[in-house]
Amino acid sequence: ILIAAAPSGLVKVQYNFSGSITTSTYVYPNVWLKLVRSGSSFSAFLSPDGVTWTSVLANKSLPTIPAAATVGIFECSHNVSKLGTATFDNVSFTPGP
Image (cartoon, rainbow, N blue to C red; front, side, top):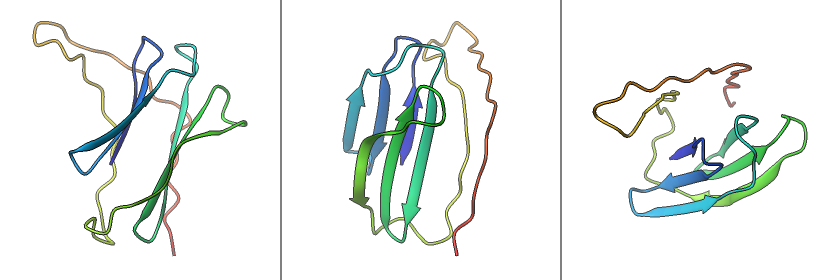
């Protein structure tokens, strides 16, 4: 599952390589993204300040993702001739039970 923000103000959530949701409810660069997992259910949230959260994806069941999964953050320019840059701050990970 992926949650991504673009400078255009778009936020995209992709899952299972075949499903996606796109929204445009933030003003770049002030975007906070949160992905929550409970068992095989995933939810994604968007916030302009890290305090007030809006649901982008609610309780999407993805039973094929194993209990032990890899988590990461990345940056991509989507342009093979340009190097992209990003600043990630206030990053946190809370392991489940």
